[in-house]
Length: 264
Image 1: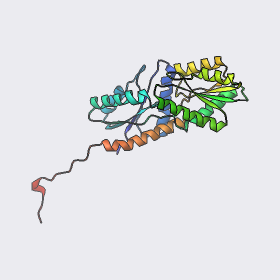
Image 2 (image 1 turned 60 degrees about the vertical axis):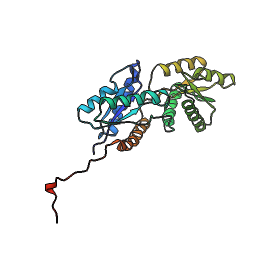
Image 3 (image 1 turned 90 degrees about the vertical axis):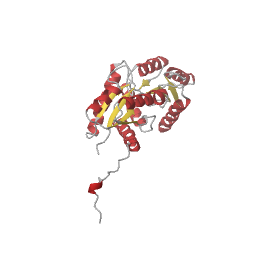
């Protein structure tokens, strides 16, 4: 059997650095799994759309597709936009078997990437001391999604034996700048902000600018392309590929023509 094609579906941004990161990740994935057909697509702001990519795959004879939402949160886009994309794709390409994987999520393994980004920032800034951390993420009106960020922040703080605050750039409080200011009001002068975003863009830029103005001594770069992110993508793909088997039509029994049935 040929493995299903993998269509990475990112949110998309007007910032070209975001799309460049996604395409770099796809290139990394292709190096890790040269047996797979892997393509990038975007929900908004930049081409190609998932329908363009899936249509191209269908025209080339691909029969099965796993769409992987390149998202950290299980909030609105994961619960509304992704199912709508899958429904529309199945309607447009009825001969294809299409399934969406789980989002990447706030997985603990990504803290390894965050730590590397933070160490690089601390080294560049010659920062030798920290007494508090802020984990900056995109916020949501979904309380469960925000709770996942809070859990991850707690794990990050436990790693380094430092107090930590989960902060949100949109839809929830505190903001990264507010979190930094609160730590400083409590007497903690060496506060670092971890940028827990997959790619550069408006939100991570806002988090960095406002956090530095609030007094942060360091703000790490977004997670970007890494082996950990790529392995997590492939893990989600593998689970969805198994689920795809349940969508496959049952094989039709082969019926013998009466004249070919021999009696003893």
